[in-house]
Each structure stands twice: as C-alpha cells, then as structure tokens.
Image: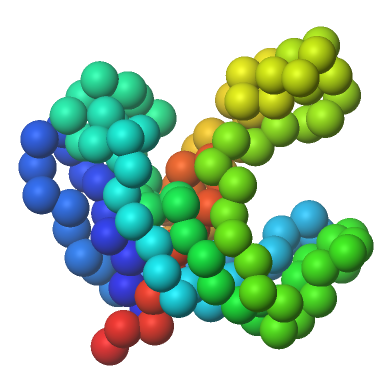
Length: 136
C-alpha cells in the first residue's frame, strides 16, 4: 500500500509503500475512497505547525469500513464513514462546554503510530487517521 508522507517542511510529499500496523482495540480501518489536503496539512508542510515526521497526510477522508477493533461499538464492516478532523473526548471542560474542536485531550491523538515505512521507520497518522491507499 502507498501513503503520501510529509518528511520535512517545504519538501514535496513522498509517495511511499508502507505496511499498516496492527489494528488496536479502539481502531477502525477504513478503505479510503476520497481524501484531500486541508489547511492543517498545508500548515504542516510549510512548517507553521509541527507534529513530528514522518506523517501520513490527508486526514480528511471518506470511505468504507474494512475492519474494527475488539472494543469498537456502533460501527461495523461495510459502513460508509467520514473522518472527524477534530477528535474529542466528550468529557473535558471544552467538550462539555460546546467547544470539542479545542478538546484538551485531543493532543494525545494528534500523532498516532499507524504505518511502517520500508526502511523500518514508523509513520504517524495526523489526528490518529492514516489514509493509506491500495495503489500499486
């Protein structure tokens, strides 16, 4: 599978073969049918925002669920889904106050290990998402 990886500010994205890491208990694996680069991706590429490298770009996506982790409820294989670009816990002061886009816990999922590059390095998925495509 291939992913568009951000490696350094100002550089072109690197389209590379990657291997997905194993599904975790709360993960949902989605076959991506469409994705895009948003303002956050552009800010990361320019160096305005930093989340480490390498990062799989394109966290705004839609697709079809291929697998769910053991603890996932309410989502099943073959469901059509869109990704949430602002993960939130639903319990902190910001979330309960109607501001989930500034969840105090969302930082813990901003860069989650999701794929292994052919050189062995781990690539993270921005906001926990990892739009990997089945391109050959």
